[in-house]
Length: 164
Image 1: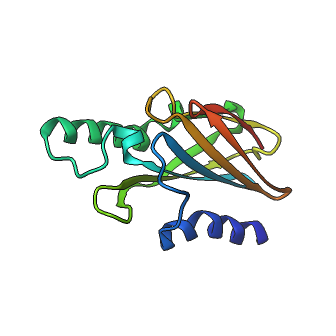
Image 2: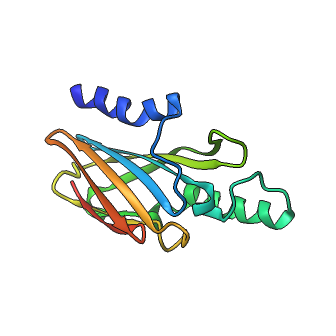
Image 3: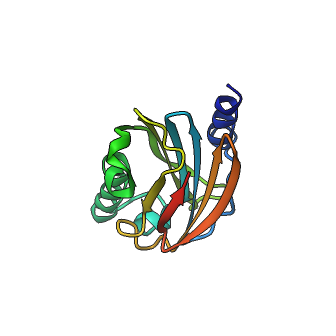
């Protein structure tokens, strides 16, 4: 129960309050909370790092690029996140969207996913690959919260592996 409250606080509070790390192009942040057999993931990055521009999509080409990149976040979780198949995790997209950041012209992309697994992911690794689909994303700060504590690391090229 304690971790459940921490999970909700870690993931929901920044979204509700609009708080996050500094708006730095090429850098994203991924918060991960692991509780029993659930993994909650919350991602945020400047839109420029995801689809190449920060303002509202104006041209047909910009709209197409933006839609394609957001669709990847909505549908290609198996490409972005990989975990042992024997855990039998069911992935669900909670939300994917774009929010205005402070001054006009600065937008961030936010996404949240939940994996519910038949077995506990504790002691296992989650492979993360944002770099293949989002080449402008050069670095990913990853914060992990679990029963035994928390840890942070930075993945270069927004690709790497995190052990729970």
